Length: 189
Image 1: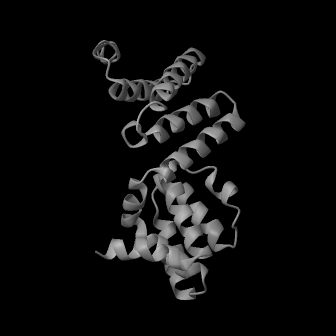
Image 2: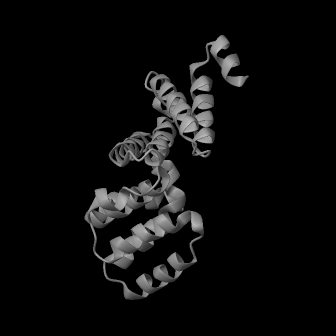
């Protein structure tokens, strides 16, 4: 009903969100017909999102749903491409830097642990062990970084767009600690 209503009202932003949400719901059913319908809805949402302001469209969410669908349909390379597009869209969104502020302590701790502070590393590893089920992929990515892995594409690939922004900030901070100073200063305000 909502879908039909937003089509009649000619509200592309709302229509896109409904299509994305419907696609996400259908992809959880895992039936071939549901996955096909989910993909169709998500692709329709994506075509709308591409015409809207990125902040209003939140296109990264649609890419994420398309990645889930592609993964369930066995199209791994396509899923990887959609996850990468979701990360790129989220990174390009101006509000992402603001959102990262709340993760500044974790980011700074990870960078300090990598740059040789053994005590901080031990504390961080203890904290990572406490991460809930929803954050296990983020914890695994941070552990990879702590163990010296800097292959950004490989580290980011399994992550959702939110976790990937945190990991990207950690990697940027390791490469150039000065680039992280603005984020940390803003977080302390």
